[in-house]
Image 1 (cartoon, one colour):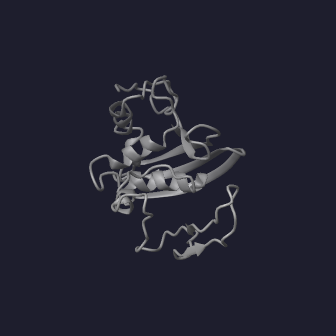
Image 2: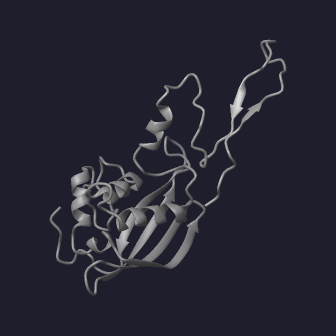
Length: 199
């Protein structure tokens, strides 16, 4: 992942604006590495701390591969810092309409409520992802410019627990999620729900 330059302020060259006034404002360059970030006057003094505490989820600067990696990392440490936090991260990355039935897991489920989404991860098919021990990317495919698929082999925390899953990531165009990579589906290789699931 790219590291950004240290934070610094840059003075713009004073010059007339359209209204004829001099332009004397300063621009702050972005940085991820600096801990002493000056907070602009128009923001509250605790703005920076509140930004650090926001829930983890999709970021505009994530590539499709990074978005998959972040979701798998969250599932690997599912119960840190609280129970099922990794599943919460997955729910934030989920690119389905909560008011319609979704094929996120293959069959059409009503996943609008987080609790239903959470229960599917605790089903025998998907629970291998929770607190998994090892994973390996089997293949990656750019289907279109804004659609990416990746197959991942996962070894679970229980003996002889191995499964293969396919992530389908879609980059949204337009709206409030414009440019973000969201998960369209997370499918199990094989017939994951052959015995049915009570969600």
